[in-house]
Amino acid sequence: MTAWLLSLALNLPFVGGPQEYQVLVALGCSAPRHVQNGYREMLAHEVLPRLLARVTDTQIRLTLAPITGRSYTAPVRVLESPSPLYAGRFQLEEFKKSFQKEALKAFDELRKRAAAECSRGTEIIGALKAAGERARRPGRILVLAHGFEQSELMNLYDYRLKLEKEEVRRSLIQRVKDRLGLPKLKGQEVCVAGITAGNDNNANARLTTSIKAFWEELIQASGGRLVGYGTTPRVCPFL
Image 1 (cartoon, rainbow, N blue to C red):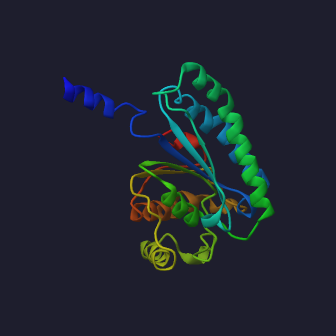
Image 2 (cartoon, helix red, strand yellow):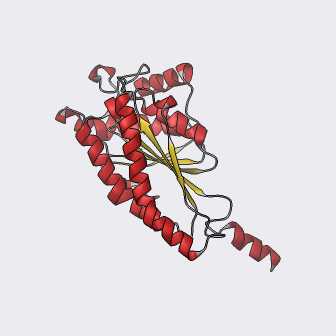
Image 3 (cartoon, rainbow, N blue to C red):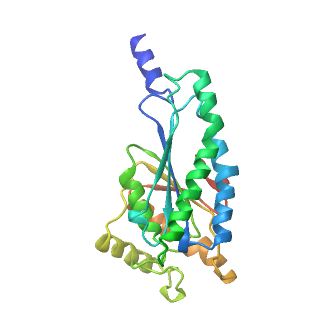
């Protein structure tokens, strides 16, 4: 009986600390204003409601961070729900009422700061590296970005890269290892959503093939797992 109770306790959703969700969003110079508006809508209508539905039986830690030209040092905001193990029903209901409002307020504050500190470039890899270092336990990382790394490491928008070749992708991942170090994503499920073709409609095929392959290989090399990739967070199985 004791062993059965221990097994049951270990499998309860709120035992062992909060479930970790990180949302990395392209802001500032990393995405046009209308694209950022689209990401905010996704957050409001496709991400937060699904997380909100869980706070009555699961403690959640939500980290919001911008993807910019300086992602590694970008500011973050963290919202954590009360533990259902200790919080009363009234406290949980009050948190549910304020959760979405506070998360969107945090998003808007980060967007203002990213615009004020705008720098050229889009460091998606830097944002993933920072997310890996913040992670306290296995978790989920949602990347709301167009898919184009444009940094000192590489410019995936450059068609001359021939990214469709496996050896090219392998050399770029080696470059990340040598210059920055791979993100530490062991135990992390990563979903990339909100991808676009940038300002070039002809980039669609490339986004769905070679760039997706690059992110999948980079995340796998970093110890994580790419579980979804598409235009909407609905492709993310953890939401």
